[in-house]
Length: 262
Ligand SMILES: [Zn+2]
Ligand SMILES: [Zn+2]
Image: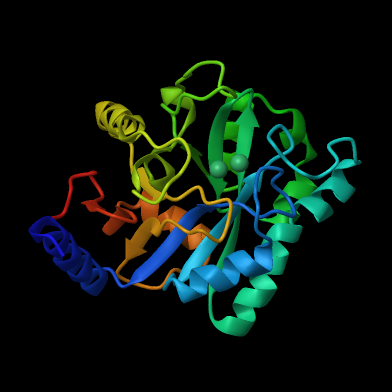
């Protein structure tokens, strides 16, 4: 092990001691996300094995790269759309992994992670289906949820251009392990994260961290708390109230201001 590796390892160990409850906040399942390669049950087991306390299943939604038939009536669509989460949750309940519901809302390549809402909320809020970005924020807020701009500075063929909506989000995903973990084989460009962090700082946004994993080849990213989260809503409260947490891209650890912990 090089000197740098052992310093990193010591920093990670200290963070895990202070913030022992690690959550994957950005994860896809094959059943629901057309681009994912592993099923929900396998994702849950892999995350448990990797030491996560819990995961948020954030599959691509009705305007994103979903594997669910987008022409289904809303109620049927929602019942299908939550299957990735429900399957992971059933496994999680058996093996001791907390599984929370979220989704990744796509708007022509620009994406938002939505936390703190439920299947019941979706069923009762069919107008979210055709909501624009402003209306999305209003509806999610009315429901008590959180809108996080996912990887705002990623540049890829499926993202026509970087679009920012500082007035329409609650926070920014500034640590995306896909961009910066040495294990990542796609979108791996750490400046995407650096730009996201600068953007978050400029607007004083809270930042989140997740891996954006699409298979059981996990990256180890996420957010770590001092306490066990009770629910997806509890996560939203933790972010809103400014609770302390640490973030990781699987290699490095950061405090909630995005400063590296060494
Ligand atoms: Zn995807
Ligand atoms: Zn994603």
